[in-house]
Image 1 (cartoon, rainbow, N blue to C red):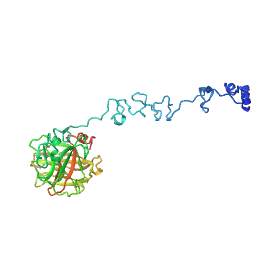
Image 2: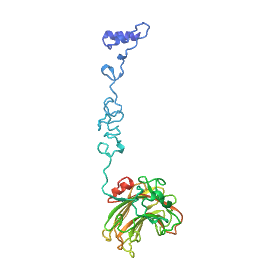
Image 3: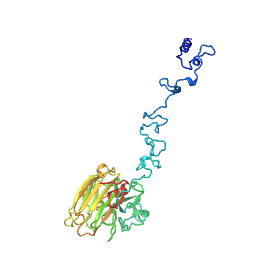
Length: 380
């Protein structure tokens, strides 16, 4: 009753809302006011506005109300929408509308650019196991009858007695669909104990000649049975450059005494100028990456050999310079250098040992070979 009297008083004074006369009626006289019509309810009592309606919300607080904001839940005062699809860049997973998500797009703001530019340089040849009919190697040395035979058209079908094979698992390839897996045991009858791919023969176009300056990239994986604690004396190489005709390797890598050893030598057989450096710890059960830069010459002023690797980073893919040497890197009685890839150990070593290699590429720049071998170009 008090509210009714108050309402009537406001009407008489002319200060009641235009709808007050209807709002406080008790049509049936039961002592209860009639319901207020929906159009007379103030939805925002603290905000004056036309028809007492609420202004559109601004969920993300960026100054643009939700009805005009192209990213309602993400604050974006710029409102940039590169592909004009109504969804602002701040919340659009494909800013340029080229069908590739920003995370996988080299230039997410240019629909015409999706992939990074090709790295500079040229891949000269590869030996990564991807080609089953031509392995890019001329010779394989392992247990007879595979001692010094041509591996072409042979590695995939017969696996060379299981001593050298292309594999898709154990380990999973570092690059591509295949890796090489090599095994050495005590039953050898092919010059010491070794399983290696090589480039023999005279005038082989894939050998390195005086004046050549090349980069090589590859990965090595030591399996569980590899004896990385074995001593470093004598042959125990996983990779080497061998002079043509044969002599001590000019560059070699070996895993021994739980470390990686890098040896370089050259000049002459009587004065080989040999250097061996411990370049990092051995990590088994993962791919370790190597990048070599070599310029072969008989001049002490222009010879060069360098090696980068991720071995001191736990083989996590981050390459750092492990050693660099300016020196004669070709024996003065040599005509060329061939590559040997695999495992070569002394006959006195015992037991079965297994390792894998993958990604081997030779090229003119570090970027082109590391992209092939590791999937990402590396610039020293």
